[in-house]
Image (tube, rainbow, N blue to C red):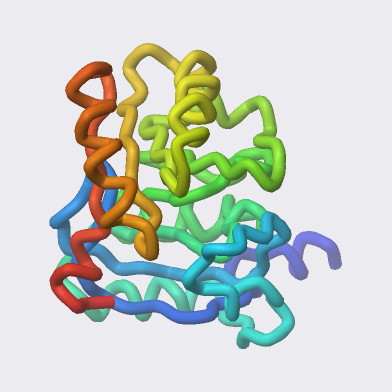
Length: 208
């Protein structure tokens, strides 16, 4: 009976929203992507722009089969799993099904839970509000640090010292403070060229 209940077609995940757009930030900025935003988060960033995702119980549960079917309605084959904090859920079946359907699987995570699933790209965006799980440092392809104030540069360096040497390092201004922080980020990157600037270009383009 347990094997039947855990069959991939019966796995249910809380989906706040899913949509086809362009990846607006980070290393894969500008690529067509199907976003799957899962409900549930316990990190509690005060500047989060999707706080409605925090309570997983508010969002309908969809089967892995239905989620993949939705993704296949669009021509792009990059799937981005985000949240909320998507690693609150076991993502093994979802990523396996997406990859079998021909998708590249990317995740955006704060890294506070152990990594589940099969990933082509892991974007690790640590937060001061909750310590990351240690296994994220060896799996992160991209370290994206949100810069809200000047102390976040030191915070970024602390995490950069723990990731793999080939991990991409990005600094991104928090949107509500980008006018204040972007000039500081630009100067920081000029003085510390291992870093790159990431911008939320989807907000400039006024797309989801």
